[in-house]
Length: 609
View 1 (spheres, rainbow, N blue to C red):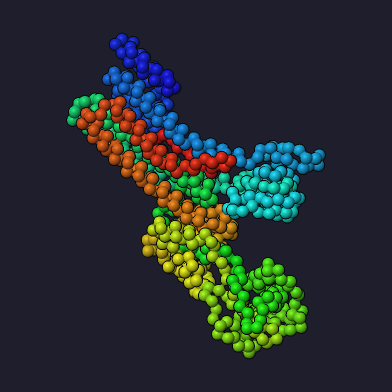
View 2: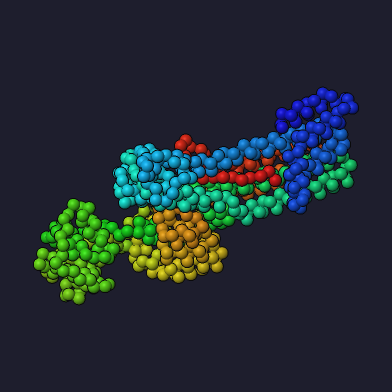
């Protein structure tokens, strides 16, 4: 099409002195301009003012005054712009195909007739799927035979391969790294974890952000402004060439096509980085966030108590203290008791069975181990039994719990237990603060614990002893103060606050309720992914508004120069196309770069409007 149109323009210029020139010009415009005229007609029927409609007016006006060469070149420029625009977003279209094609199409299955290879569409739940070393796992299921290590970072965000033995769960989209596995399929296709991720990205890309609707309205206003300016130019100057130049030079294609491209590129880049944004609306709101509220347990900490230190009394060996405490706690269901037992076993200690076990809610346990009475609990338990605690042990460390251990009425020492802060959390908080965003820590734990964690992370504002309703009320107060709030959490108790915030962000390891309530879901537990996503959202906002300002500036200056007779139609067309491509390429910077062997989560759908 472009070659034929260019040839028509050259032929027209060569044979311009001859009378047949009008026939050649009309034929060239009819053939080359058909895509433009078609979109213009559709816009007219829909009562939408688009750039195709204004370009059609300019082309027809040029042809009407026998400026066929000008009309042909304008048509050529517009078609070139559309082709280049399509090439810019084609990488994104390929990316979604790559994502879908990542799962294997031919799958080895063990059936009654033996091992056979079937197409993915023929797979059914309950099938025994065979995956060789280096192969991609096509289903969510349970390992029924084999032993291997699996890279499931695409799904869970875990950086290290996870060992898989019979009974372990596996996810579609994971990569089997070492041994062969036989897997019983439980969920296939779109029902798998990988399929849900694809579906979430596709739904997000089909959504329209408010700024995108603003871009469409602004594009229409610019067209009306250009037509009004053209009419005024003709009334004042009676110069048809200047009038046509005014219509041609004004172009809002850069924002009409660049805005959705920026939004979809950002969603794809965030997905590549491990964060699923559920729509353009949430991306836009995330770009405006000035306050980030963080839950403590499971978000900035691991959510699992760990033994921080063992503090034996004078003359007591640390190993002896640990052995007594672990044996007494062996039958305990309390998280702190389980932590002590796990720590002892991890330290290579043998944990013996207690002869008797008793639990006192809110205080601790009493047990009989080796014929001796053992107490393991808080200071209130010891005081009830008349056992004094020296000041060196009675003053609990900030942010931790002290578990005291006695044997036969003698204090053996204390075990310090605390939830550990995630190693990446501090850097993530530093990055968030560097963006000018205010971090706030909320927790249901005691103030001493909240103060310790906040100090370790460098967070100045924190609130402790909060129930789920309290977290929601805190978000409401921030909203009333005109703060734009993002809430990051992982538990059921965070769901009310996630819904209340302008943007709710759920950790991928959290509960289903939290993930369903959230607007952004992080794959895995890495808070750095949220900081990266926040940076992407803010960059997207800057790029879109830069395109807005640049388009208005170029159009205003171009219309002024064209009205003054300083731009001919050809130069006006060049400026129109060049500025459009600059703004589209500016948005294209957000498209995720292709990396060998990986798939982007992106499906841009941009039209030249």
